[in-house]
Length: 290
Image 1 (tube, rainbow, N blue to C red):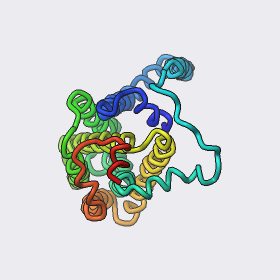
Image 2: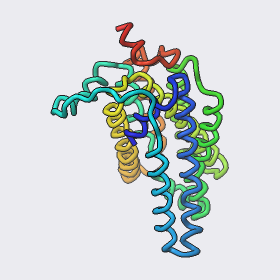
Image 3: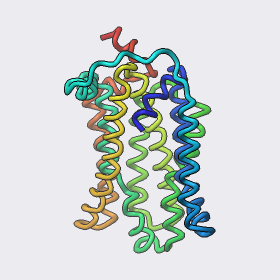
Image 4: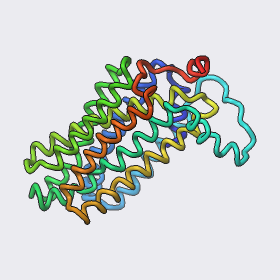
C-alpha cells in the first residue's frame, strides 16, 4: 500500500491528485461492498473456485501494475542506513501540517471505532438479525462510495483545512446519532453519513500527504501514514470493545463520537496552519516559503 500511494503522484499531475485518490477510494469501496457478496456466490457454487478466482485476480493485478510507467527518472537513493530508515519520521516531525494530518486520523479512528460493535447493535439493540447486520456493515461503504464518486468528478479545491475539520465533526456527530439510535433506518442513515464524511477526510488527508511530500521522501512518509491508518483501525476496534465491556455498547459508541469531536477541536488549536490550508500545494512550494 505505501508503494501504491507513493506511485500515484508520478502518474498524474499535482492538480489531479485529489481526483485520482477519490477514484481509488471509490474503487476500494466498490470492492468492499461487492467482494463479500461475490465471494459468497462463488463459494456456493464451488469452494475451490474462491481460491482460483483470487489467484486469477492477483495475476491480472500483478501484470497490469508491471506495465505502469512512471513519469520522469527515479529520484536518487541514499545508501540504506539507520538514519535513512528514520528519515520519514524526521520529515513529518519537522512539518507540522503533515504531523497534524497523520495524527488527526490516528486519534479520531481510535476513538470513533463504532463499526466493531455492529454485531451487538444488530442483535441486542436494533434486533435486525444477520441480514440487518449485513446492511449495517455495508452502509458506511455505500456512503463512502457515493461520496468518492462525486469527489472524483467534483474535487474539493478551496478551503481544504476548514472542510477537513468539518467532516471530522460530522463523523463524530454521526457516530453519536448511531450510538443513541434505536431505529434501524436512522442507524443506516447515520452509518452512511459516517462513511461519507470519512471518505471526504480520506481524500483530503491522502492528497495533502502525497502533494506536500517530495519524491525522495514520499515512500517513507506513505509507509508511516499507512502504519498509522492500519494500526488505528485495529486499536479503535480494541478500544470500542474494551469500553463496551466496562460501560456497555451504547456508552462506548457515544464516548467515541464525543472523543472524535474533542480531538478535532484540540487539533484545530494545536495545528492552526492545518486549519488555514486553502489549496493543495506541492512540497517544493512549501520549501520555498520556509
